[in-house]
Image (tube, rainbow, N blue to C red; front, side, top):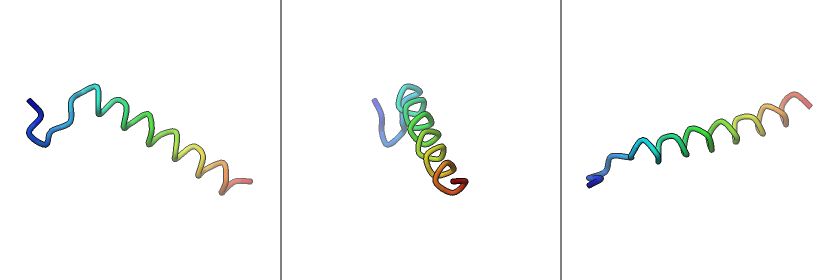
Length: 31
């Protein structure tokens, strides 16, 4: 049952996706 709360699996995926996006943004800024 979620009730608006993300599961640990969801959080792990989100953190990885966010880190990936931040990495891409940083590469663009530092080019």
